[in-house]
Length: 506
Image (cartoon, rainbow, N blue to C red):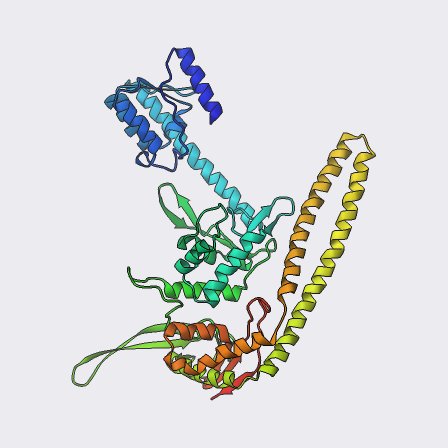
């Protein structure tokens, strides 16, 4: 832009004009209408007030690209303000009130608009081709940076911790997006660009499927100054990113966001979802293995006396195509009550020593896998250092410029891999430091479970929160219920679910 300004100033000097004002506009002439371009509005006001006689722009395309906007702007500047509009680019004709010049100018405007439309079409086509090949073509992603050398998303330590805390607060602590944004701002946390967190920012992170390792692209396509249109999208499991959340937990987040949506203005946000379906997302069919869906509706009928009655119903429904041999739907309130009652009985019977020993065994298994990966990466680090040292010696022993360039490029590539490797090593060391299980952790967990004895006094939101944190899954087969408890100690068993026992109930 600075170069364009200098050319315009030189053109003014050559034409004998005195420069009275210089305007720099960041808004796109293509995407933004005239009324939403404050810099252009300043120019128009200055012209209407008689402050300028001539307006010079680098190109007509910098001033306006919509033929409709061009007609309006020509009327304002040429007829209403009575000024001249010229361009530094010799290929652009000056605007004029002459009918022939107006026609030529409009043809140029039409050409500019169509050129941009065609350019956008080609860009989108190339981006779609890249996405079809599994390459990332999106914008910045909080918690990650794209490494153009390794072709992978690499975690940014400070950012990724914020993203992990956002998912944990929403999924396990019942926070709303508003509460999460407030909590992060109070802690002094900032977005990727150093800004405050807003509920919309938190929501976009929670909705992004990349955080569970799945890449979605192209399901909508933008239209100029209009709402996006649906398009044929692309989704795949990406091998160039290390997910921070499981697909199952991500889907639970989406279910919870949907259940919380549509609140009335002024209505207070609850600490957790008020969905009437407590087992949504964790109830499975014992016949076909599919996850049951939640449905609610209203049954209407007329009594003998002519009275019309509406009766709401809430059901869990299996949509599997296999033959079940029984009706594949259940009264949701009845099933929820049975599961809560039996879960309370099972949880209250847990022994702290048994739980501690089981959890300790699981923790050791987890630590073993972490140590194995850490040892492999440590050996890999040593190999990289040795190879970089060899390349460094090769650079010093040759005068061939092509070989020097090749060695330097190879060292840059290896250095990038080394940096990525060191980040992962640091993550593994932190995980091992956090994987310390204490009896106090187990006792605190069991103390939390004791509160479940008063579940009948809980609000629907609190019931749902307890169910999400205590129950791994429920399998239902006609009149048979199989309940699996889980235990996820925050920090020490991060991402590790431990099923204790199975309880069958008729």
